[in-house]
Length: 169
Image (cartoon, rainbow, N blue to C red):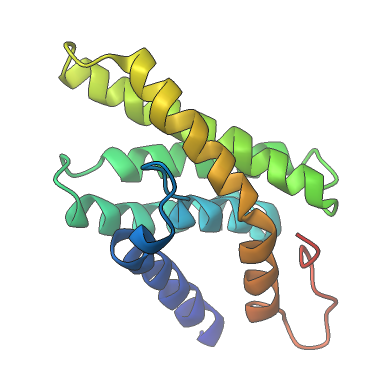
């Protein structure tokens, strides 16, 4: 029970930081996606079910905090959590480069889905421009902070008596 409460607090805290304080580390208008990092972390460490719940909780908070239609972030995070959880089962995810690669791919998938949804609703918006100026740099930035965030999460969610999984990156 305490582990689930800790999980919920971590997801809400990441979404809160994502929507408020993260502007301090903005580079060229691009921010890392902390909620997506949590989705990928839980997909790798605990499977797609926990990742999808993380996507629902974090995405709901992001949807409420933004001026988007409710459900865009939720849908994208849940799909990414499921896909990464399924893929992570077939990979040796202990190597830091694999984790960074998963985050990069997940971030690109998330951006593609989100941009696709926006384009369907507002066809006049240039989807290619958004992908090249926001999604790709954001994916690189998110992948860049992966080792730090995964290390902190691995220490925070380490079970007593078990070796820490995923702490190297």
